Length: 299
Ligand SMILES: Cc1ncc(COP(=O)(O)O)c(C=O)c1O
Image 1: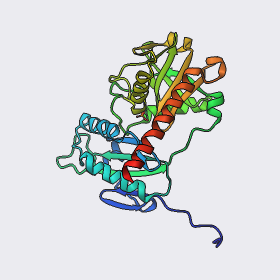
Image 2: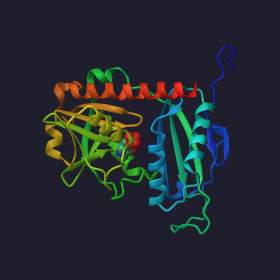
Image 3: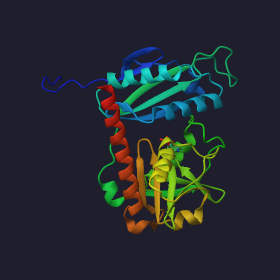
């Protein structure tokens, strides 16, 4: 029965291959190589007050991912920017998370690349969920697991089955993330980058093929530098991870999450540490400043 008093739900608008359509009307072929092989790459761009955050960094990483899997970037950065701004303005929320995916397109099923490629471009946005206030009080629980992914983790590929299985193992143990260990060293989370505080110095593993070069990671490195915080980009051994004063997980949608329990070990007395408080304040001030600067520019 239709309830006349309930406002109609506003259908999200998505972009698929040159068209803006309602989410329910967006369809792709079952022969799309993204569906058949997971043959594609993606980006997630946070948007504050309808302004895409660190957009040029996301577009540069997108270009690197496309190059790594030999797909020609179908658009230049001005075209991407226009498209992303259009989709943000066609949707209702002020703060959104923009998901953008490019696959190698539709072709008869064959592992080798098709002779003529027409990439599929799909963009959608979802409301950006703010960190619940309990995070600042209690932090989160993570578990450590062997990093059983491939050797090209710097590519932001849609082939995410290992990450999906790792994160699910964390969820099944009541944790929110898996911190991955490869040959005795912690690389990153299943969906996030890793930082620790050891002897009052911030440490994050260096970029390379074994982890995704996170946009949030890079911003934290910049903010640490601006605030004269001791920062080292170096390997984190499993022992250092477990002896850390603080552990943080970072991503565009999680921002900076303080880990207060790792497996059964309580970290930072079970509360987010002083360094985390300092960095999350700096991170939020940076966002605020950037948004107000852009608002002034556009007035
Ligand atoms: C495996 C992995 N590492 C790191 C990150 C963090 O990247 P960013 O800060 O660009 O969101 C993500 C984000 O999805 C990820 O999936």
